[in-house]
Image (tube, rainbow over all chains, first blue to last red):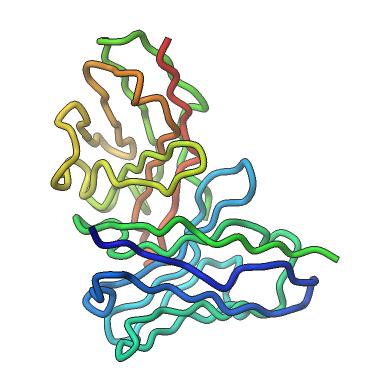
Length: 117
Length: 110
């Protein structure tokens, strides 16, 4: 069974940076659009960003535009989310979702990002 | 982009059918047949139930069905079971080429 795995979360001070990574055990990630979705503690899901298969098209939610950058390295079957100028309100579990909204939609278990002084 | 509107909670007895509504605008739900529904159990990753308004991915029970009318999409769970107790989220593609989720609905099996 293919699994998506996120990594790179942790505790960071406001204004700091983190880079999240996402890979899948079936080496299928390169064939799909991939999205990042976040969920603040006790709150609902919020869409963050997406990238197409070759990395030439990216889209962002207004709340992260200009601060977050999504990218991918298909040779490594890995997706990234570079998060800069982090704010307290960015605290959340960040999920990587392969083929979000498609029939092969598959999510990882998420990685927790905590922004606090 | 405002979140789609879902009821905070819905409940039903085992065997009953329940419906969860998801109201958007003419810029998202009403404009595209790109509405999905995800189920999330506590502490778990979301799982896709429905995509493209009414399509069920392989492995999802046919007790789950989706529909849309105008700016409102709906998820119906038939033959409610204890394992269906979870949070449910709708989401839609938007005219800004982004995606928007609903606030989530907690389903309780009485």
